[in-house]
Image (cartoon, rainbow, N blue to C red; front, side, top):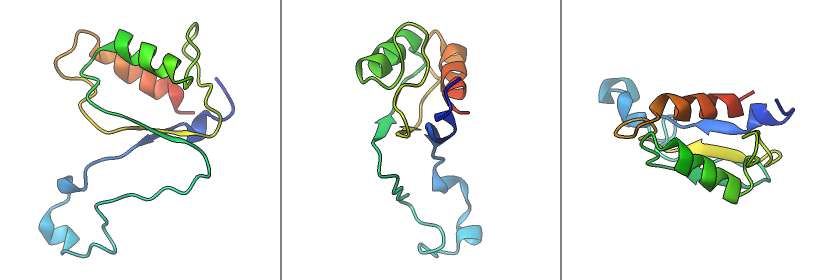
Length: 104
Protein backbone atom coordinates (compact mmCIF):
# COMPACT_ATOMS: atom_id res chain seq x y z
CA UNK A 1 0.00 0.00 0.00
CA UNK A 2 1.18 3.51 -0.81
CA UNK A 3 2.63 5.85 1.77
CA UNK A 4 0.08 8.58 1.08
CA UNK A 5 -3.00 6.44 1.58
CA UNK A 6 -3.62 7.65 5.11
CA UNK A 7 -4.71 10.99 3.65
CA UNK A 8 -6.42 9.38 0.71
CA UNK A 9 -9.89 8.65 1.99
CA UNK A 10 -12.22 10.89 3.93
CA UNK A 11 -15.59 9.53 4.84
CA UNK A 12 -17.99 12.26 5.79
CA UNK A 13 -20.99 11.23 7.81
CA UNK A 14 -24.20 13.18 7.73
CA UNK A 15 -24.55 15.46 10.72
CA UNK A 16 -28.23 14.54 10.70
CA UNK A 17 -27.42 11.49 12.79
CA UNK A 18 -26.89 13.80 15.77
CA UNK A 19 -30.07 14.63 17.57
CA UNK A 20 -31.16 18.27 17.78
CA UNK A 21 -30.78 18.03 21.55
CA UNK A 22 -27.10 17.13 21.27
CA UNK A 23 -26.41 19.72 18.58
CA UNK A 24 -28.49 22.42 20.15
CA UNK A 25 -28.48 24.44 16.93
CA UNK A 26 -24.84 25.46 17.43
CA UNK A 27 -23.78 25.54 13.78
CA UNK A 28 -20.36 26.94 14.69
CA UNK A 29 -19.64 23.87 16.80
CA UNK A 30 -21.49 21.38 14.56
CA UNK A 31 -21.28 22.73 11.00
CA UNK A 32 -23.30 21.20 8.20
CA UNK A 33 -20.43 21.91 5.81
CA UNK A 34 -16.93 20.54 6.16
CA UNK A 35 -14.01 22.64 4.97
CA UNK A 36 -10.81 20.84 4.03
CA UNK A 37 -7.73 22.88 3.21
CA UNK A 38 -5.33 20.32 1.84
CA UNK A 39 -3.67 22.26 -0.92
CA UNK A 40 -4.42 19.19 -3.02
CA UNK A 41 -7.31 17.96 -5.14
CA UNK A 42 -10.51 16.82 -3.45
CA UNK A 43 -12.58 14.23 -5.31
CA UNK A 44 -16.18 13.42 -4.35
CA UNK A 45 -18.06 10.30 -5.39
CA UNK A 46 -21.67 9.56 -4.58
CA UNK A 47 -24.35 7.01 -5.34
CA UNK A 48 -22.03 4.10 -6.11
CA UNK A 49 -24.84 1.68 -5.15
CA UNK A 50 -22.58 -1.36 -5.06
CA UNK A 51 -21.46 -1.01 -8.70
CA UNK A 52 -17.84 -2.01 -8.19
CA UNK A 53 -16.84 -2.16 -11.85
CA UNK A 54 -18.19 1.31 -12.61
CA UNK A 55 -16.47 2.71 -9.50
CA UNK A 56 -13.13 1.18 -10.49
CA UNK A 57 -13.47 2.51 -14.03
CA UNK A 58 -14.35 5.98 -12.74
CA UNK A 59 -11.46 6.13 -10.25
CA UNK A 60 -8.99 4.80 -12.82
CA UNK A 61 -10.16 7.27 -15.49
CA UNK A 62 -9.67 10.13 -13.02
CA UNK A 63 -6.20 8.73 -12.19
CA UNK A 64 -7.14 8.29 -8.55
CA UNK A 65 -6.25 4.60 -8.62
CA UNK A 66 -4.17 2.50 -10.97
CA UNK A 67 -6.25 0.56 -13.47
CA UNK A 68 -4.37 -2.71 -13.00
CA UNK A 69 -3.96 -3.17 -9.25
CA UNK A 70 -6.44 -0.59 -7.92
CA UNK A 71 -3.86 1.13 -5.73
CA UNK A 72 -3.90 4.82 -4.82
CA UNK A 73 -2.15 7.05 -7.37
CA UNK A 74 -3.50 10.51 -6.50
CA UNK A 75 -0.76 11.57 -4.10
CA UNK A 76 -2.09 13.58 -1.17
CA UNK A 77 -5.50 14.21 -2.75
CA UNK A 78 -8.63 13.47 -0.73
CA UNK A 79 -11.43 11.15 -1.86
CA UNK A 80 -14.85 11.67 -0.29
CA UNK A 81 -17.67 9.15 -0.57
CA UNK A 82 -20.88 11.10 -0.07
CA UNK A 83 -23.19 8.16 0.52
CA UNK A 84 -25.18 5.31 -1.00
CA UNK A 85 -22.12 3.12 -1.42
CA UNK A 86 -23.75 -0.23 -0.92
CA UNK A 87 -27.45 -0.49 -1.56
CA UNK A 88 -29.05 -1.78 -4.76
CA UNK A 89 -25.92 -3.00 -6.52
CA UNK A 90 -24.48 -6.47 -6.97
CA UNK A 91 -21.02 -5.92 -5.44
CA UNK A 92 -21.52 -3.89 -2.27
CA UNK A 93 -18.89 -5.77 -0.29
CA UNK A 94 -16.27 -5.23 -3.00
CA UNK A 95 -17.06 -1.48 -3.02
CA UNK A 96 -16.53 -1.27 0.75
CA UNK A 97 -13.34 -3.34 0.52
CA UNK A 98 -11.95 -1.05 -2.18
CA UNK A 99 -12.77 2.09 -0.20
CA UNK A 100 -11.16 0.60 2.91
CA UNK A 101 -8.05 -0.43 0.97
CA UNK A 102 -7.51 3.19 -0.11
CA UNK A 103 -7.34 4.27 3.53
CA UNK A 104 -3.96 3.65 5.14
